[in-house]
Amino acid sequence: MSRASSETSIFTEMTELARRTGAVNLGQGVPDLDSPPALLAGVSAAVLAGRNQYPPAAGHPALRAAVAAHQRAHYGLDFAPEAEVLVTTGATEALAAACLALTGPGDEILTLDPAYDAYPADARLSGARLVSVPLTLDGDGFALDADALAAAVTPRTRLLLLNSPHNPAGKVLDDAELAAVAELCRERDLTVVTDEVYEHLVYDGRHRPIATLPGMRERTLTISSAGKTFNVTGWKVGWITGPARLVAAVASVKQWLTYASGTPYQEAIALMLGEVGPWAAGLRATLRAHRDLLTAGLAEAGLRPLRAEAGYFVQADIRGWGAADGLRFCRELPERAGVVAIPTSAFRQGEDPAPWLVRFSFCRRAEPLREAVERLAKAA
Ligand code: PMP
Ligand code: GLN
Image (cartoon, rainbow, N blue to C red; front, side, top):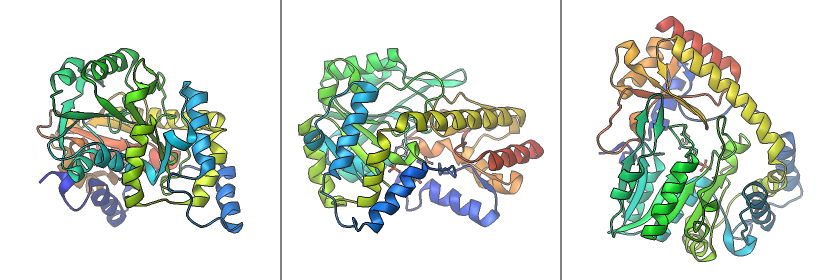
């Protein structure tokens, strides 16, 4: 049974291990960094003013307008707030609703491997088959094999599930890779669902939504979320933008999953999204420094780090410690070093070409990161 079909996710297992052992938790990507004070005040204001009932099922009108304005200001993409923006309960619901709306038994969903663990679960929920194309390990980073992706398309391929910036790989698809994917989608008439929750957390290079490439806007559903951008992962407010016919299909499923959620959160995020630029620049500077701290610490401890261009995570090669199995290593690491990490194998389907990779999170404050790095150095 694959991890994604078992009852306990790897995040639950490793978070429980951290709790039990008191280890520094660099497993699940849960930030302990501050959020914008105006955002927090916005929620309180909405709650105290009594705006606590259901918003419209498609989302608070102010948030739909703010998401449309965000896509225009940052990427030059135009979406009509009423018909082309849908607010969801986190990116998680957007992903599930998109898979349920667009695929069914007999269909194939194409994705990259490794992949965020919700993707195989969502494919299973809709009865579709997930077809995974490995990212290739290229020196200290990952690369997309566009030929392998093209070869994996069949007449049953209903959608391509992309993730850039990528969890766990920390990879941002570059211009050449995006162009190759877009060309394939146009040629084979594929619909794309793209998970861009780390859009504002790119440290090297830049984020370019695939919907901005020629011919892609009309075939792409773009997903994002407030969780990572504002350090509010517990609020579970996400959104999806795309052409009206695709958004309507997702909305028709979403209404039966949660109907709607979190009016005060949606209202506060609507206010902040217009000012995300300066906030995100500060957060990026902090996280870039934390990525550097963790990367240097892992190297120092003999756990060769891979390149992390974006997001929350650095992968490390555990073979320097004489280990080969990431899951076993992570189960033993709290005892051995007082640190919790997540095996990259939890994000793999089928044969794992690199079971010796382990994912460490750097979305923590500097103190726990320094503590973790010191513990790893001692245990090395
Ligand atoms: N996609 C990716 C790639 C993620 O890392 C996460 C983080 N949990 C999610 C989706 C889920 O986002 P949300 O918390 O908004 O549901
Ligand atoms: N996205 C977070 C991570 O990759 C975890 C989300 C979850 O627990 N499902 O660590």
